[in-house]
Length: 547
Image 1 (spheres, rainbow, N blue to C red):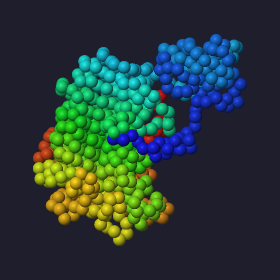
Image 2: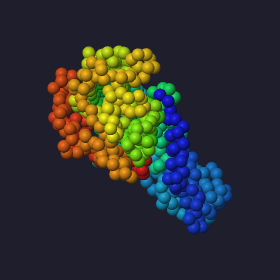
Image 3: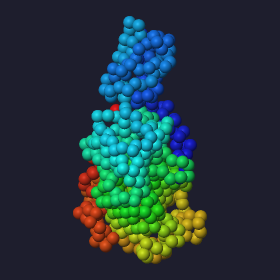
Image 4: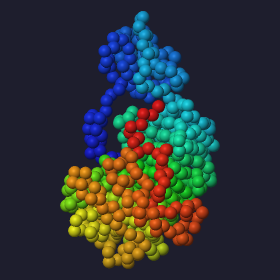
């Protein structure tokens, strides 16, 4: 996978310049003496930080500064800037400075955290009454267990590309609650966080039975990776029994959200991939996967950078999923039939050639998908990539049942659910690279595979309302409040009354016989009348003032 392209970086710079106010600067605000700001706002013992203000002595010995009651070492001084080394001090307190007979107590933002670095050979517990800062690669070695209490926040350093690795024979137990989720996020302040600020969390391949436990956890702005190599906010390359991993959200990963490339068996439930630049969910290698209740929700600002799919299946073992919802970049943000952001009546080429597919089954991959929904603009709702995937569809390989796909629509052109030339409009069902390795998307409507697809699944148009023209919504599934990027930071995930998604579910297929699957869910897609993200998930992480 490639790193985010320069266009996204330029957009971030422009956005940052227009929307961010530096809170740590030497604007004295009318003060004759005192502290006006601290940079960075988060630090740990041993870090070097700058304390800005006015009226300081020009020599280090002419000032005294304490952090939460403990004197700091001043290594450089000017009348407007004290460079200090943060001492080992209690988390709570304040920053005070004295210069001669003058003193000042700073009440602005500064948080002292516990810095974690390097290899960890002993079991530890991270508690909610401390703030943790991960720097560089933190690796828990064989025999060590990391326990994280509910409500704990872990800031991950951008400069050192922080990452958390759980080695073979090590384990992790981090279980939040709906009211007190555990949060791993970028150390950067609000509005300055970006996909790929840090590496992510990796559960390495393990020969032991899975003893990890992860629930009600958010992983934000991770996914930094070497160009053309894979990465993920959460990578799980070991077996994990049913019930071990559930209610986990990745947000704005610079690569994949969730990735599994091991050779074990993994069970996953209640996952959210939000705004991730890479694939929302990837299953590769020889992993045997079971999953239910997944939401993948793209952000139009980052959706086209990596050719990212909602779901990528390349594993040589079956991937069996039910009740997933994959929502691509929508009409207001980037609809494949808009001539502008305000006119939905005339088709054009607005889907980027680097856009992805809702579902991408490639090579020897086998997907068994049931009771799901793939919506909004993708190059293809589902693509079977290569002769092996194509020939095995409903023939001992991939099966897709009771799943709804939307396609874009404009007046007089209801056929966009089939196969017009990419990127003119999105397919609902497609073959890809069948004639040759680079032949691209190909027509499918006369194939046995297409006939099987339409037998078991349905397609419906989706056109979102344009505010300037008031054109009517075309929304046969009742999902426009989820699929419209105007609601991106507060999506309404429950399905509207009367939606076809609230009927037609079927759990009778033998491939859903594993007791892991909840067969009582009276809906298709990830949501029915209830929102299981309520309380613990966040769809506006760039605005969260973590302390």
